Length: 330
Image 1 (cartoon, rainbow, N blue to C red):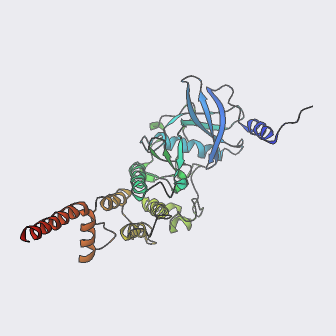
Image 2: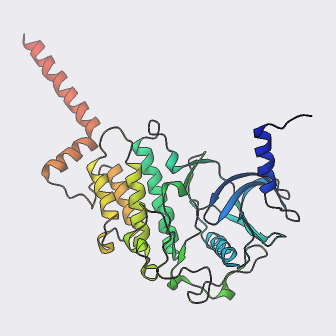
Image 3: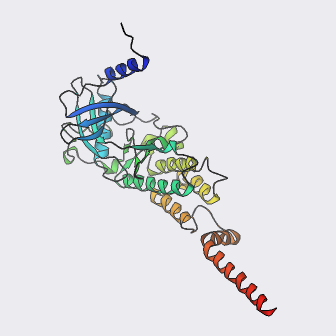
C-alpha cells in the first residue's frame, strides 16, 4: 500500500474544489487568485485555443446578490475598453448556479511586489502616470473604482499596466443608460443599474474599500456623495506607496503631489486624475509642479537639475579653455 504525499493530497483537494465548467467552452487549469467576491482561475478556451482568466463566485449564491455584483463588474469592464483595463470576452452561468465571466489572462506582477532595488523612481512614476490615464478614462465614462491600491494594479510582462478588480466600482448617476441600450455580455442579461432597485448597489453608510487607501468620505460611508475626487485620494495613497523603500528621502515635489491628492478636504485635491498625472509628467520633464510652490532658490536648483548635462559640458569647456590660456601665457 502506497501513501500519498502531502503535496499530492493538497493538489487533489485543490482540484476537487475547482468549479465544474462542464458544458462550457472552458477547461479550468489552475486557481490563480481571488478578487472581490470571486475566485480567479486560469483556463483554456477550447474553441479559440487560448488561455483566459475566469472569475467565478467561490460558492453558489442562493440570494442572487453576489451574482448580481459579479455580473455588474463584468458589464462595467465591458464598457471600459482601454489598454489599462483587462477586456472581458464572455460571461455565463454554471450548472450549480454560479455565474462567471471570462477575461484576458495577464501574466506579470502586482504593484505591491515591486523590487525596491530594480524598479527606479523613474519607472515607478511612469507606471503611476499610466494608472492615472486609466482611472481618468473610467471617470470620463462615469465609473469610480473605489478600491484603488497597489495590489489591484498589475504590471505585465511587456510593460503593460492594468488596473484590476472593479468589483466595488460605482456608476455615477449621470452616466446610467436605459437597460435596453446596453447589449448583454455572453448569455447573461445585464443587471439593473438603477440606484434604487439594483441589489448590486451599495447602501448609504456601507463602507467598501481598503483602509489606508480610501478617502475620508468613503471611510465614513458617504456613498451617495462620492465623486471622482475619492479615487484621486486613493491615487495619492498609491503614489505615496511608490515613494517608499527608495534610497534616500523622496523628492519634495513628489511628496507635495501626494499630499495634495490626499487632502482631507476634497475641494483641495486635484480636480481630476488627468491633472494629477500632468503634475507627475511636469516633474519628470523638470518643469514646475502645481503642488509645490517654488522660490528663487528652488527654481535655480530645478533648472540646474534639468540642464545638468549642458551645465557640466559648458563648465568643462570653460575650465579647459582657462587652462589652455594659462599654459600659453607661460
